[in-house]
Image (tube, rainbow, N blue to C red):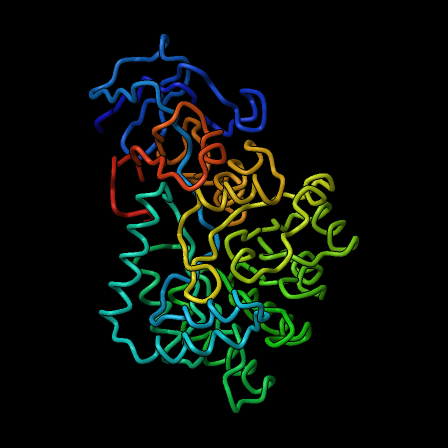
Length: 395
């Protein structure tokens, strides 16, 4: 395999705890890539020879963003709903049905093209791995179609048939469909199952039924929880050993304690919180309790129409009071942990020998510039699976 030496790195964020600090930052560093894998990391003065050489000229290098919560396969526009919310009206979960109508009317080619365009935009901004959910089909044929198309771009497809209850359908009847024929149909294409455990969507008993059925089918568990108010989503996720519970805007002391003592990652979605005007999650209290947090875009047409993880990082620092280091870690290593990809074969989210070569160079000397210069496009170059400026953020 061809090896590449990346040098001229002013500041290297490794996420390697053995290098000190949360981010394991190395000054005047170099990295050697062998094929699709990190082969060597250290001071530039000690770098071994390689077949090719890339000089970043004093720019910072960090792991590619890991976006562990997206709804990027959809059609349609919900800008009117957004404007309605910005006029002071509350977000309601039922707005999802607007996207369901538009998505079910779109062809495979239209959905595929839209997903590809959003994925390209994400990678141009440094995202090298993403999860994609279904949930805009709500019947067997449509959910299966969305799962199949999503599986063309990522191996982290999440089945979210339990997104909302379709109109003129009894919730318990719909749950029976989700855990029966729908789950059986999507199973070849998905790795995870998710449920919107929230008022206006699915109650705790219905959510438990969905999650337990998915677990019995061999899927990992994810939960939308505690977005619109305190509820049972977080505690259900921790009890069942879900990899992640996402949103977490409204947490009581028991929720924070549960996340601090369990293995479930709290995935926070700051771009969505700005759009819905929900209070930001208590990120500092979660960290103080020992919880692991991730940041993700929640890219979707209704409440977070963005794929910019840099925007999420800046918002987390400036509005949620995370430190730069905490936000960068949450958007890289935290996302990897939320997807259970921080270990095993070809781990992601860190620049450590043996990890997948997903790298993101920025036109700035330090990662502090993501919040110091919010809204700026800092991306200089991206490596996905060792391929520089590739257009394929997931296998």
